[in-house]
Length: 554
Ligand code: F6P
Image (cartoon, rainbow, N blue to C red; front, side):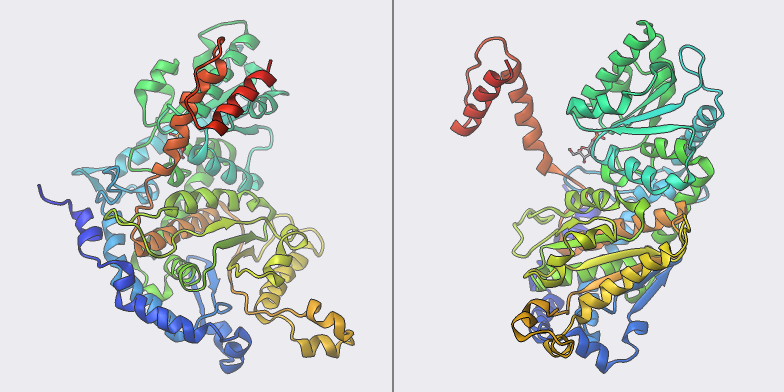
């Protein structure tokens, strides 16, 4: 049997990462650069702050405050070439089945392709299907938003509850929060994900069932948390509406790839919005999984968001790597992860509306590149996906920034900011942006013992007040947080993840690591629920915890 093209692209043509010429050169180069201070790099090159920048589709990236020289960049770009990044990008965009462990194409880029484009999967152009679903979402959203779609008792929908988890929740929540400024304020949006009953109870506690629409969002429609919450929602609805089964059709819609399970749940497939196995959960916020987003911000804004995504897709596919924002971001994170032992990346949006953006990026980055086996099945001998985390500025400054400035760990940071405020209030925005610039300056340049002493600090206090500096950061600046800008930012990180995964030679599109816990939970559930004392065959700790819980809950 011949090896599929996608497998060949990744597994046979590319030599192991650590044997690549650029990798070896970077190892040697890192030794020389490690001692260099950003103070020196900026002093030696007065134009560095202007030179080491790149711009695409209105996103401006300043990467000058990184511990790199022109040689570092040259070698990182060589690493991208040697790793076959260009070919791999083409393989993704042309619908090759690059998700080899699940034998699937990876085509979230098709979700935002214009109608006129053609992207083939197994010989079929998928773009018309994408637009068919978008049109169906549009018609539905217009009916709900206009009040034409009514609930069982004839009242218009006032509350929308998205039930989903992982990619079927994080994208919708993040996008709703991010684009709240553009959302219909007379509609309430809530998101239920956790199987902890509190999540559902709190989400609906002040809602009237006959004004509430549930969107059950699940690619597989079998996920334990989502199906449990969906059944609870149906019970809540029926109880509140007098048990009329027919009300389910008016109050439940589904977003899924699994029509069979949707039908089994009792949702008419006429009220189902589909997507495809070539859309990964964490890459799906711009598919029908974004139905709650469209209901909130309206179809036109949703399409503007898709255009933003598409602009960065085009940039990623066509821009030379040295000016390619996702490629640069990806390479810089590899530089710190693999050559500076950095374990995390902090995402610091200076935009309150992006408060869920770090949480969203956690799944995107860590479920994608939290892998220790290469596409050829070998265990890596280098570090892969770093931990992504963060909080919106300026709040983080008053909590964990201390560690970033003066701790023992190197934490590369991405600062995100917008030139225009969506809520311009007095001097707030200038203060906010002053903090962005101040933080990146402080991190890079710090404060020397001489400077501290010159301020009259007593000698004993000097070491405590010194800032070493040399702490790297990127600054991403855009004009204003619009739906299109959000699309651009998400696509930027999606393709950054792609760049990383390609170089690390891992499959960024599967998530086998979540399976074991799911399977064990299925085994433990009946052990917790059984009327009689179950026979337990776990380890002594798990057995003991189960017995203790059974006793305590009585
Ligand atoms: O458990 C992980 C995961 O499979 C994610 O990849 C996915 O986003 C999430 O569960 C939800 O899956 P589904 O949309 O099929 O309910």
